[in-house]
Length: 115
Length: 114
Image (cartoon, rainbow over all chains, first blue to last red; front, side, top):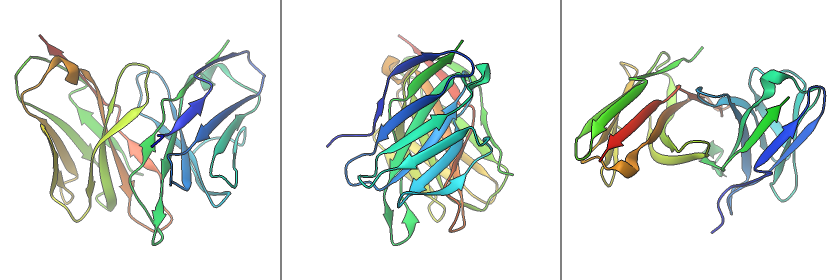
């Protein structure tokens, strides 16, 4: 049973560039959430996707956008990269049953470095 | 706004010791609370999930308790081992049908010395 997978593992970009991160949820899961974790901090919620729609958004600018595909996989896009966007980006998946969300399972993360 | 605090920020213990990690949250209207483990530079591994109606959960040497009214949770680790060395994070999900995000603390860095 495959867990949550993310690609790429590491990424180096320069300021002003754009980046796309990818996530495949755990088998059987239908909901994907994205989190940003700066060094020494806890993860911060970016947004969540279910049924290919953004369901909730954290306190992040519009430079952060996402997408969910019919197979439940998801992408996180960040435009006009800033130095402060350097972080570990974590994807979490879960299954909605009876309209309620269950336990979230996290992937290994993508380490983004902006120079 | 929900805020989650974890004390202590770092803890170093000798192998075999029992220990307690603390988590507090400001808004008691939670749906559930999860404890996670994170190894350096890695993703999060879910350890225990406690629903708001529960008082505790146990898995092996781990026991997590929840006191929703006082806004506190503890993670008890029995007979600690060097392999337990990691950062431990707690996260809460606020109650309410449209609230899906987890709010995390900054974590407790645990070092178990052989």
